[in-house]
Amino acid sequence: MHLAQGVPNRSAITTASNASLQLGSPLWRYTSNEECKSKYSPKDAEKYGWWFCYISRPEPPTVMIVGSSFANHLYPGFANHPALAGENVLSIGSCRPEWIYEADIYPTTDELSPCTPSRRLDQQQIINETASRYRPKLIIVSGLGEEPDDNYTERLGKRISFFEEQGARVVLVLPQPTAEFNLSACFGRRLRLGPKSCDIPYEQIQQMRAVQAPLIERMKKTNPRVQFFDTTQVFCTFQNCSFIKDKLPLFRDQYSHFSEFGSSEVAKLFFEQIHIRD
Image 1 (tube, one colour):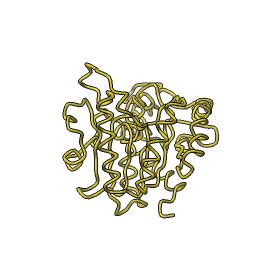
Image 2 (tube, helix red, strand yellow):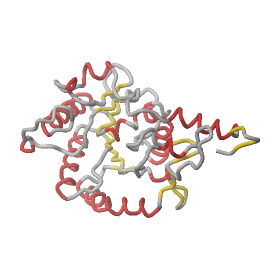
Image 3 (tube, helix red, strand yellow):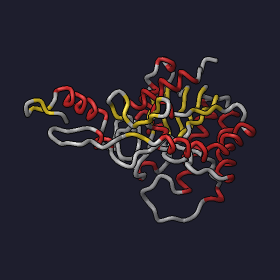
Image 4 (cartoon, helix red, strand yellow):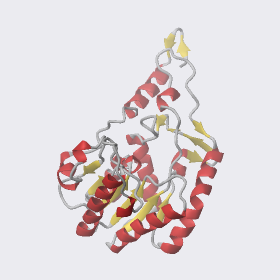
């Protein structure tokens, strides 16, 4: 924070204030709404520690965003983007999106997690039934595994195939860079000095993409219609990458969930690259 005759610089205060509006607790307003929970929730969802279920209006969905919290954080940017004007967007699911089989079920004493095998299967059934019944034109899948092996890739391919069989265009959102700290550390507050650097080593981006490359190559063979979306350009200009853009944080919490600003920036890039009317 810069001082002018002992008074904090006004532009610095404004920047920190604007940034604070994007930073918040993990409990954000797009987690769920009653219109969604009343129709698209598994039978024991009220016992879950968290359940992401949010729909634009109480009508059949025409666009679905499926996956974990890393799918749900896309909702505000996508639902409010002009490319989806008139569409009814449903964000649903709390777990990774790859297919789960009944044989995967095993007893557990975990009463909080929505991602025990039996609960994942319940969610899969709800989501699959919704896609089959309403046949949305677009399904965006996010929250993928960060180190996919052959078994994972096969299961993800099966889920994609199911969605495609319902007539949906499927787009996979590749895993994003993550911060190991709350981005509030990047902004000066009052007289506090030395905000933390929020740059990302470009090598980190390259390593992430190298890990995902085998999955992409296999998906291109088994599911040639699926499209891939990489958020890297939101973070990077040439080889300079940062968790901050236009002096605002792209994440809202220490778990690397997009802020509303970040979600909006991701949606802008998405619809520049992927034209859903094609």
